Length: 173
Image (cartoon, rainbow, N blue to C red; front, top):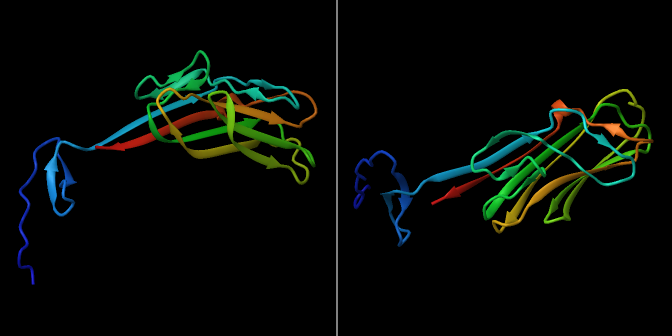
């Protein structure tokens, strides 16, 4: 019937509609959403040795909202909170039957996640891409890196234009 309903006055510039402290009515406040992010890529092909975990370097910083990414060591040290981290690496040549590519996200020098690509036939001349995406928690001093391992015969080069490392978080205040 609409009884007891009240119209909320219009807010001002920079205000956001929030729930009051009793959680029973909306109110205008100075809160909002902050988006932090970084994006890095490899500008040239990196050689990845066979049967050895190799840190992937991403020397090109494409964007960084708060200087979280360090191009000198290809690490990101994001502020505390929950972050979505993404990576993708593309090899210039394909896998043959039975070969594998593994991608790892490292946190503070240790593996926390891994992704696997298996080959089940042919494709030796085609490019092969492995990518991963994961929600991680960070305390503000944690750092993250990407490593790759493959079972190709001999070293293989990454396609520099198609390899990336990025991440973002949303903070609601």
